[in-house]
Length: 121
Image (cartoon, rainbow, N blue to C red; front, side, top):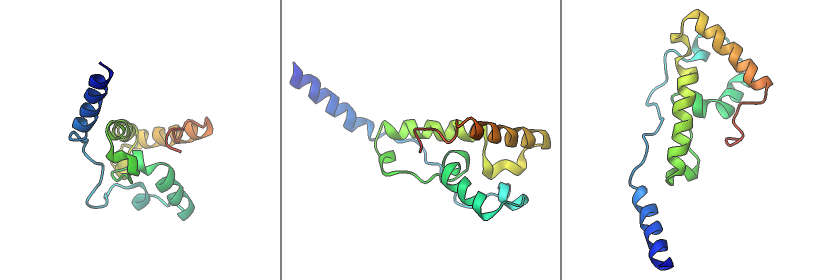
């Protein structure tokens, strides 16, 4: 019975490797990227790229384990949710009120140490 259960688990783990989420990799830069429309220092650009852009832009740098299911699904759900909340590559497409609100939220989540997520750092 244990061998049958173990074999079933192995088969399921192998089978789910065939179902991969779509990758968040843009082929070109966005004309609405925040740093194209607002003065952003190199230090802040670097911080955004290393701490924010993987979930809050159109380009994610994936770690090695993102090629293994179910980790890829979990990571992709973070990326999809992050981009819905704030996408720095689409920032200039937001209306003025939304831009201000999003920047206020960025300050708030950083001050509360809610971002970047603990699972990310």
